[in-house]
Image 1 (spheres, rainbow, N blue to C red):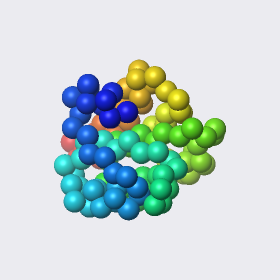
Image 2 (image 1 turned 30 degrees about the vertical axis):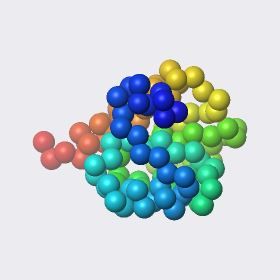
Image 3 (image 1 turned 45 degrees about the vertical axis):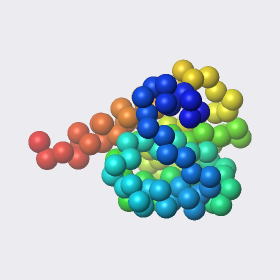
Image 4 (image 1 turned 60 degrees about the vertical axis):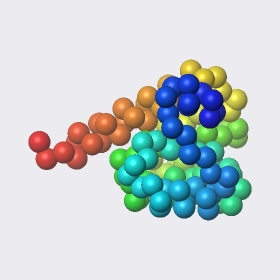
Length: 114
């Protein structure tokens, strides 16, 4: 995944587990343009991580990935995450990133006082 993102000119910051991911978000905050996280990861689950990020950075695009069937986040009200099932092709990841960015751009526009 890192290779795909770097080929698309993303600067990638990796975290080995949920605790490290939360620390990274705390450190970089609004300088982060996108989060891609697995739903199931060591040191915490990606869904809890993504939900906490959504609370602190509500307009940050987030893409969830998982190798397990129906994603549990679909049952959450107002879920605003793109989802990529594993295994995936680079084009599938790119499409999910574009969808997440588009969704957040629409939210930003709706929240704008213009």
